[in-house]
Length: 128
Ligand SMILES: [Zn+2]
Image (tube, helix red, strand yellow):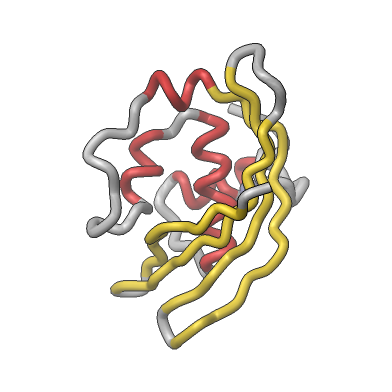
């Protein structure tokens, strides 16, 4: 278990995304997004699946793909409510797969809240 949370807020993991990974409810779409980034870092596929909306969740999240990716950092650029129970989060995440050069993933993600819980729906990747 990591000491400092991978999500970039600089708090202890146990007081940050660790709470959400243990079942606490994310207050905002941004908190959910950060906790999903941390779950990618930690290879917590069950959490990724549980927080992915049932309509868009892939049939399989390959553990090998998650394990092969080394995440280098997360920067949340924007978080905005787009309705009573919908929000967007714009972020830049950097990662490496194997010995390849670092990739910069710039994504605008959509989230919805159902029964008080936020879910990741999908995202538009900004080319560049
Ligand atoms: Zn965190």
